[in-house]
Length: 168
Image 1 (cartoon, rainbow, N blue to C red):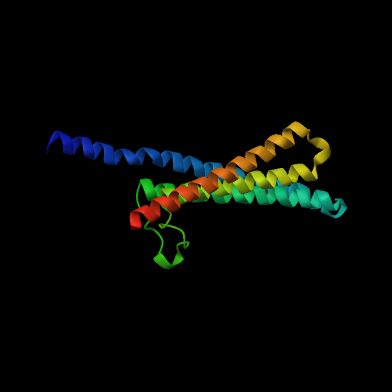
Image 2: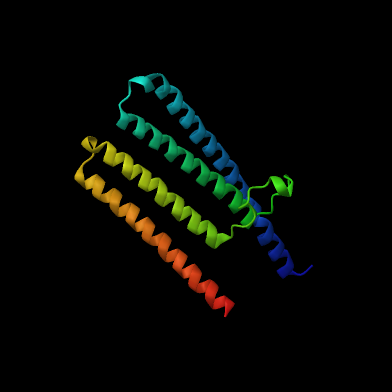
């Protein structure tokens, strides 16, 4: 075996070094789920006495946590399948539609889109709790949502241009 083949085999095998990161992200997912259940269990008894805006804020908090959990799952599976190996444990018909079909460009767009939505939900929650927010904090939250939205649009546009250039 040549030196080049040995180096290539080591480099190719090096992709497995990312597996502990994906496993740690499962731990992070468990933390998010635990926090979701904690928030739900602690707020549920007081639900009958809560104001409408407090119920909406509670709902937005849970939606934010579920979006974050979905984002973690997306990164774990698409990252593993794109960079380590294809998941072959489940029958093909039980796999989610997106699994195995998200390439790096699509993952990038989905990540930016998810982060934008999470930031927008946080911004909406801030508007509902306007008394506790400074104008400066609100302004920065609007800027952050706008920048992530613009980045998503620019990445989608560059991917569209690249795809059309490759087709012609």
